[in-house]
Figure (tube, rainbow, N blue to C red):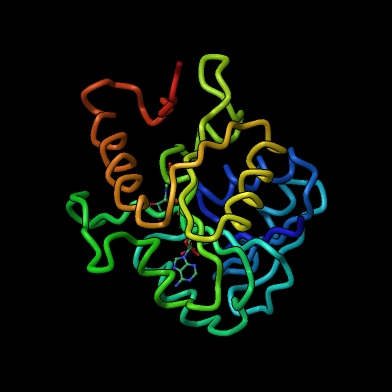
Length: 207
Ligand SMILES: NC(=O)c1ccc[n+]([C@@H]2O[C@H](COP(=O)([O-])OP(=O)(O)OC[C@H]3O[C@@H](n4cnc5c(N)ncnc54)[C@H](OP(=O)(O)O)[C@@H]3O)[C@@H](O)[C@H]2O)c1
């Protein structure tokens, strides 16, 4: 599976670490090419670097950017994303106030899907903190990655990527479940101060 990550920040590092651990080739695209090159060197494996706007060769594209940049990026790439699996990881919030934002489409992922009608959009990784993705576990428990999509094949592709990375994929249903996943992601953020867990906790389904 050839994976492209757009963004070179915290989540690009966390998800990139897991993609490389799973043995998949990776390209990281940054606004700044030197940031992408530095992250590619750090991640190792078969990781290449480029700049946002470069053609996308991968089958899976992870939008490791803030809402609403996620929508802007897919609009920029337009029909180049047709047929590709596009992973929206955002937790829509106002970066000034840290209060949640409720996208008109129901969720950030549905907004991305509306902006990229030819892409197969999957919501994933929004409930896993960047720092926990690097080791892939918290307290000896592999992270749960909750997935939502209207495209079952695309969801299976991302589930495979997640499992290859040593994590557990949990199918949360159709893309409209992204509304609940984004609320859960926000709640997990909001609990950090109260719990004092410093973004080192994970949301896990135990049974
Ligand atoms: N951090 C977490 O633990 C966590 C957990 C779950 C979900 N998320 C979600 O993951 C997403 C990324 O979070 P993060 O913590 O990785 O943020 P981050 O560290 O700030 O990284 C954001 C990246 O987006 C890039 N970027 C900014 N404007 C762009 C544009 N117009 N086109 C392309 N790239 C652009 C930035 O590039 P420059 O640095 O060059 O500006 C940076 O590489 C957010 O949607 C967040 O809600 C984060």
